[in-house]
Image (cartoon, rainbow, N blue to C red; front, top):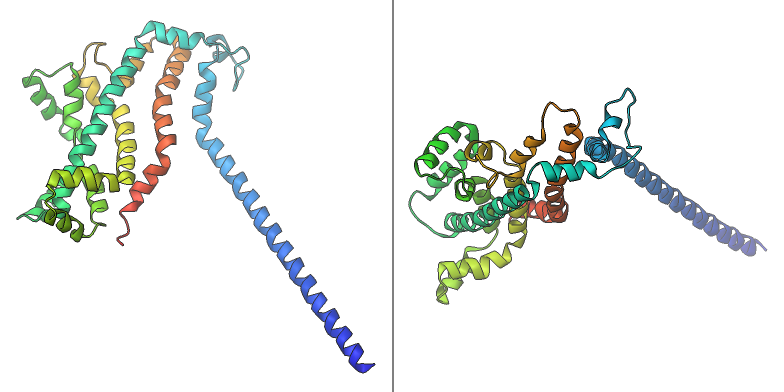
Length: 302
């Protein structure tokens, strides 16, 4: 009987241990679930706070001016209307401005990808005297604000007769030190033996860049494309200085033409702003993963 009692106690102790383990697992799962719910709730609150100005601007865009200029604080339009968007498209050639911005931003993006990849290839794989000094000089240009050179650039393009044209908006921005640095850091993750093997096989430098390097650097190209396009789309000071007609104005300059002393134009201007920020936000949402992956892909060498 004593042996049976001992076995029963051992069996009961094992069952108690299993029950305790199950209870601990349930508590751990409940804790993780509660932490996840709390994290999602905090992220939602922070996102709403950050997006509140944008959401309110969208609300104003659909709001009649009579509802905006009242003693009441209207977060949402009581009588939504599309008239503000219609008036914004009628008063200024907004479609033309959007097309100009797409042309300028697209050409700048393509030009920087090509020029920066070529320069980065030279700094990464070629060996020539003064390479490190030249690279440091290129990086030093990132410390010079654009406002410091805008007058000299204006005088240069003015002497060339480029004012009020597409090339005055595109050519000065066809390369960037940041893009060269990004591509170089990415290329440094590749072994030099890759380039040497290609040269032994009779591969030219351009063939190596466009057939081997560029297909392997899609993450860096995606990051560069998103970053450059958004910056080019949001340019304001340079287009304001060098354009003087609606044929070449970009959206950032053209949207200010909706502003006037008339209070009704505020809702129309906000509607125009909502229209012009939609492309840049869409590009960022589509390419955000590529942007993050490309920014960090060259950080670790392996």
